[in-house]
Amino acid sequence: MLDWLWSMSVAEATGFFFALNILIVSGAYCLECIVPRFFKTAPQNLQHSSLELLLMTCTVFVNAVISVAGWLLWKHGYLQLNRHAGVLTVLRDTLVLVLLMDFALYVLHRIAHMRWFYGWAHYLHHKYREVRPLTLFVMHPLEALGFGSLWVITLMLSAFSFESVIIFLQLNLYFGIAAHCGFSPYPKWLSKTMAALAIAEPDFHLQHHRDETVNLGFYTTIWDRVFRTNLR
Image (cartoon, rainbow, N blue to C red; front, side, top):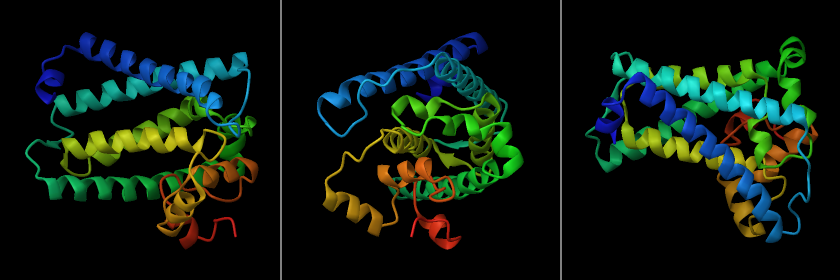
């Protein structure tokens, strides 16, 4: 796959990343439509405002542009990927990426909730307290740019394995959609197990949308516990 990505022209890479991001949002929309048929506690028949649709469109555009920028940095040698990593290296790199990005996103999220920054951009995401999968993509374009740039900068810190980058991106999408599904689809025993392992489950972020002073983490509850911003 890396060879295929490397062989692309700028136009081909741009088309690919735009198509990929459109596909991701389309998948979230399909989930939003299908899930209520199987879970009675899922949000039902929620309408999308024109502002939501506009912000989602902007997020797709920004994410695609960030992806192209990361691809260009890789092509020009500013971003390195390990193409020959073993299983243990892949697992290690995945864990490092999750913890590193979780901490960086926690810090960025706390900054976003400061009065000046909140009124400037982040308030748009919190206009929608009844979250559903597409809410993940409802944010100010500059905020999407900030999150995306943070990811690219993190990748430039070390030559992470290609497989760990792919795994992390899948985990990031899963946690993002799960956190914004608007209910907890897991059985109680699994939710309790995740909480015990400091893994953020859907109710964790749902509480943040109901009380913006708590639960600022993304993938884990570690930093909220350390900095005492978890719901107690």
